[in-house]
Each structure stands twice: as C-alpha cells, then as structure tokens.
Amino acid sequence: MRKNEIEKLVEQGEMLPLMEEFYTIQGEGFHKGTAAYFIRIGGCDVGCHWCDVKESWDAEKHPPTSTKTIVDNALSYSDTIVITGGEPLTWDMTKITHALKERGAKIHIETSGAYPLTGVWDWICLSPKKLKLPTAEISKKAHELKVIVFNKSDFAFAEKQAEKVNEDCILYLQPEWSVRDKMVPLIVDYVMKNPKWKVSLQTHKYLNIP
Ligand SMILES: C[S@@+](CC[C@H](N)C(=O)[O-])C[C@H]1O[C@@H](n2cnc3c(N)ncnc32)[C@H](O)[C@@H]1O
Ligand SMILES: Nc1nc2[nH]cc(C(=O)O)c2c(=O)[nH]1
Ligand code: SF4
Ligand SMILES: [Mg+2]
Image (cartoon, protein in one colour):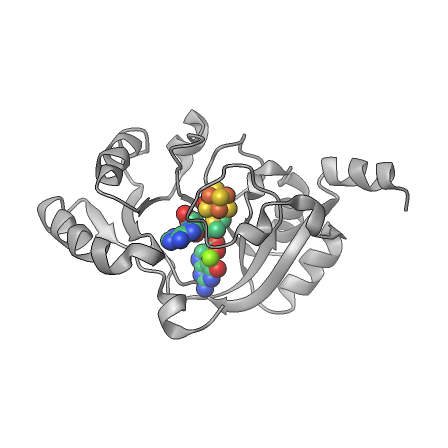
C-alpha cells in the first residue's frame, strides 16, 4: 500500500500503529488482578519525564496495523481488552472500540485524557498529566482517576483533578515506580488522612509479568 493510503487509513482508525500486545493481569487501579488482553498503540507527545514506556512515543516506529486484525487476535485471548499506549486518544478509537463492542468485549482505556475522547468504553482510567491537562469531557466521564505521585506537589495536583470528576469516580494515588520507596509512606499517610483516596500499585512489576 502507498504511504498516503496508509496515512489515510490511520486517520480513519482503520489502521493503528501497534507497538505490542500481550495477555496479562491488569496490574493497576480498580481492575488489578483481572486477566486482560493489552493492546499498546504507539504515539504520545505528552512527554512525562518518568514515563515507563518511552519507546512508545514515536508513532513512526510502530507498524500501522489493520484494526480488524488487532480485534480478531485480541478476542482469541480474552473478552476483557485494555487499550493503552502511548496515548491511545492520539488516534480515532471509534472503529476499534465498535468492532470490539459488537463482539461482546469489555473495553477499557488507559489514558491521560489530553486529546478528545473517541470510542465507546466500559471503563475509563484517567491518569491526568500536568504537562497536558485532560479535557473537561473525559474528567466527567472517567470511572477511575489514577494520579501518579512523583513528588509532594502531586497531592495538590491530585485534589485539583478530583474536583473535576463525577461523584462515582474512584480515586487512586499511584507511586511513580522509580521513587516508590520514598513516595509509598507519604501516600499511605495521605490516604489514611484523606480516605476518599485509595492506593494503587503497579502490581505487575512486583509479579514480574508484562
Ligand atoms: C504508559 S501509560 C499509557 C496510557 C496513557 N498515555 C496514560 O498516561 O494514561 C499507562 C499508565 O502507566 C502510568 N505510568 C507511566 N509511567 C509510570 C511510572 N514510571 N510509574 C508509575 N506509573 C506510571 C501512567 O500514568 C498510566 O496510568
Ligand atoms: N500488567 C499491566 N497492567 C497495566 N495497567 C496499565 C498498564 C499500562 O501500561 O497501560 C499496564 C501494563 O503495562 N501491564
Ligand atoms: S501520557 Fe502516558 S504514554 Fe505519554 S508520556 Fe505520559 S505516561 Fe507516557
Ligand atoms: Mg505499563
């Protein structure tokens, strides 16, 4: 296929730059412990300095892959599908989510919410970032808010983000992995004093699974 034809299909969400996909256990947040198939779409320009998947940022490094192929393969593993990245909302998620939905999957997204919300979702995990704040729409629709705590100032940022979500949204504080030993005691103390928050850990990293 010619390059501009592929670009057009990516624009339409008929193809997506696929970085990797794997069947694992959701490690974080509300659904931690649940088996799920992860689809990691390349491309992100939010630029978190502590991002644990920087290889995902450059979309050009990840092959444009037919959405139908991604869906067929994913459903052969699980009916719970997590779409992550990169920043999945860089792309139009309408086609992939409708194709999954038609076949009865539960579809979850991991997103910073920095770009317009597309697609149909059973579960939205919003992990807002200071560098590119989430849209008002996704803040209202998020099922869980998962704020990464890298330093003390992130508690105030978390409270600001929590003002924008709906009242049923579940609130998590998750330590940034490289500073977990320093941040975990602060998070534990904060959650005991402010029990509307819960602790989220990257449990897959302790389990040594993807
Ligand atoms: C790699 S991101 C991809 C999805 C989307 N771009 C986002 O940031 O939500 C997946 C999740 O990992 C979190 N994350 C990334 N790097 C992390 C780190 N070093 N420590 C803890 N959580 C991290 C993100 O905040 C997000 O909740
Ligand atoms: N097991 C596992 N759980 C996760 N939850 C969110 C992840 C992500 O990178 O989006 C992730 C991941 O990379 N692996
Ligand atoms: S928004 Fe997500 S993928 Fe992008 S840099 Fe931040 S943590 Fe990494
Ligand atoms: Mg991860």
